[in-house]
Length: 453
Image (tube, rainbow, N blue to C red; front, side):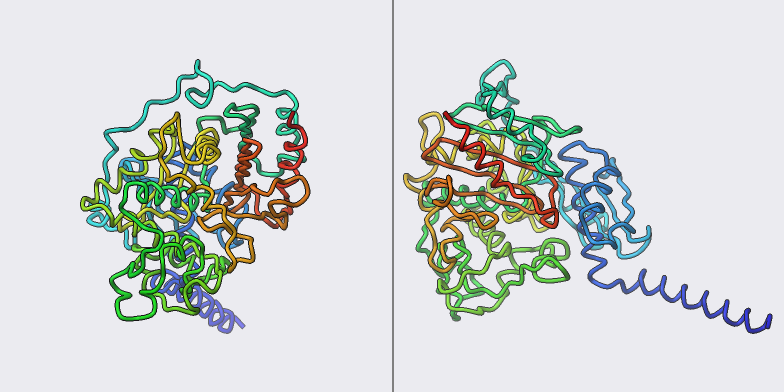
């Protein structure tokens, strides 16, 4: 019996050793994605938002995510400004590195040489922080409307995981509320709300005569095949016809792009057509990152392109906290990675309410915001022509008490901005609210519309 137990014990030890060796040397891609995701989220929240890494791991990564993420451990190197995540503390290491002016990016291998080559610089034109004594938007002083303030402070309307709500009406900040641990200065991730900002940046380049909505032959690799017929408008409207799997449940195109690819736009550009350009709507974060590469290529100097969002958009609007992040290749992740305070997200919404003008200065072409919210036939009217949504949670513009010109900026885990030009109203709601919780931001939006004078 002793011999049998000894043999079985040896087999167990050998099996465990083999499993550990397999995880260490040949980890499945799903584990690599998970560790890459954990490293990226922790890195950005530590070095951009100043939050505690363990809190971010537990609250932002593990609590709402895949059960395997509960086995992830992270280590932060503040001198190197990097975060490494490992399953069970050793397997499938994922690494993200912070670069001043460029945010955090996943790096494969994590070698010192790769990290050194990714270092960025802060923009010399970083805007000054808002004056707290001045009224919003020049400062951060609100003009509270008690009726609306009462609504945003209602937990049932604010929803689980709410981190910030800001309401703007007639150019004034009329209500705001924040969860414990967050305030008006905390940069918060917009996820896919970043897509709408990418569309605005392209609008700036169109206004400067450097891009054209009807432009074709967008990518050199597409020369000589049917992808050359894809127009800039097709990419903006999510009807490019490029094959791209946006399912987040496994290792798919979108998760591979965000957490395993160093050149996200290049990965997307290599995709074949699955439909004729302009004929089929398919929501694709990949096309938004391709759009980032396209506008950045309109600059001869890459450094000029890297400073453009801040100099051409964020600084004029006073969005002092706003930061767009690049991938390891230096291309902005225009699909997903912009951090900004709730008040700065509200400044961007006010900019759209003013049809792309700010303090009398036109930054976007006249009518460009109307173009952004024009329904596209391929989407069945659910999506606008310029990276915005025309329905949220089944509620469309023009139904119930939502005016026909209502549109939304939306992002993963409960990020939402409702913009209603005819009411001069914007409602910013940010948080960590997975869809499985069943929260409906439209109840908050509807009640705020009803409360307007």
